[in-house]
Image (tube, rainbow, N blue to C red):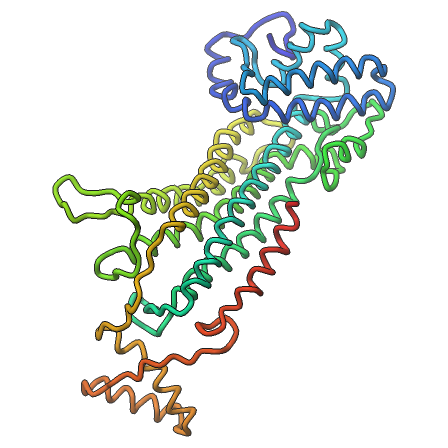
Length: 430
């Protein structure tokens, strides 16, 4: 049962190797294939390739299939090659020859392209919403704990005073940068390839602007060859966006693992959100954030895997491109899972107070005291040498006062301004 069948079937071992697990992956495209087909046949009717009564019958049948999909009852039958074949065979079985008319002016090449574009557009929206939720959580924690100081580090050596407000807020703003990349991927994805057929257009007078409007794409992939070239390029753009967020999330997970360590002791979580040891009764292991860190590290490899898979392919469709689904589909799911889990864990984070009371953090305040002397009139280099000499001779006594007021510092987190950045980007996805 293949749309391209010419009266013979390939050897079974060939089919198993070339199809692989594509049927299972295709189930995630099912509703998008129906939605794309609905737009396509509306366009076919508008240019005279379908009669109005045929359109109504086809739309009703496709609506029934969509309902089956949304109820989770849709399957690809054994022997059916892919999602496109399954839906067309269901229509043909129900409607006869009318069902066979749905493919006019379309190839499976542009059919799967539009399915993937619609799928990835929705996935990017889901990612954006998950990032936005985590962003709001981080900003809320930043405000709630803005007055709690913590050590800042360079080279993993204590450097200057920081704060939990600064720490949480830093990752919130880092996510706005990542969302700029997500927006770029969304703009690349949000272009209509339908009507490019096998990559060289069609002799039918297809109204490609009509399907663009029906499917709510922002624009067309105008050049039909360029539309086909977007396969792989779109996935790579999405993978770059995933990688950017994963980098930020993985970095944050590392901080959490480190700050939970008894040598730091900055934060903790309720016992039920940590794991223990089979022989050490005192252990509270940050397994959630360790797994998150590992998954995010793997996600950062996805763009490279796609780049290698698509490198130097000849122009036009190549079957290698089928393997992209096996890479990008799990990646979007994994990232969303990690974002949701991070948000969940942060709902229960416990921030320790008075961390800097420990004498080992005295040297955090050297820069504060140098700056205080400068404000009082001492030249900077002289103040620097004075405090440095006190440190070397063991005579340094910190003032433990922090006076940071400039934008983005401990005393002026600019939470509203950072939120405005995210609001502007999120408007793209609404």
